Image (cartoon, rainbow, N blue to C red; front, side):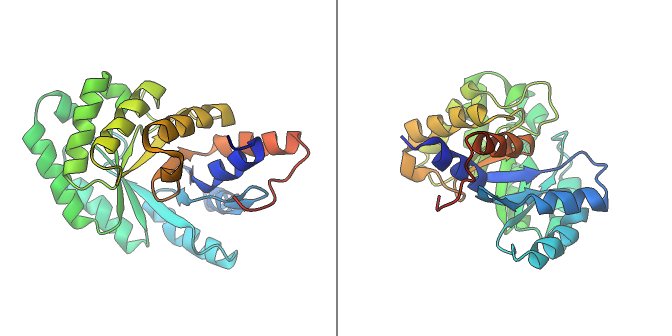
Length: 254
């Protein structure tokens, strides 16, 4: 078992530091970038709306942090079945310098039984997106584990690189039950896709639940920034506070 300081560094290294309120100012974006590296190391990516990505890229480059991922969203947050809109979002992401796209799964259409339409939507988005594609299932709306599994299988069949739990905008966010269903689906398909827990994660204790689930299902060696992410912003505050509370700085390798 890793000690708490090792876990703190690990969590930070897996974090997509996120701001998707829709009212971010230039100052807000600068402040977000300033948090991308700290006493517990660097985050995996920053996730913002595409219009902010050029500022994020320049800000990170100025800080010597050019290797941090530039993530944005598409078909967000409602998960409709408007392919034209989703394609425009993806193209804007590419033009803005994104390295990762978090695409909302058309969960309403899926629940209505429109599986073929959802498949066409996902396959078309995959063709448009040469970047790492994280598909947000909105597991809190899908509800039952069997439904989440079916949605996850469809997303993986259509080329998703990651399955992600939530937009953070629905009434129910990530849950361990949903995460287990998604991680087991990833394991069934050989463990080559990744998993992202997002929405409602605010404490280090929250994060550890999902890390331990992933390690149980796919093995400790599977977990890394290429296969596992947290989507959050407040989570970083709690990790840093936990480190500071022990009088330590998370110094040292992950």
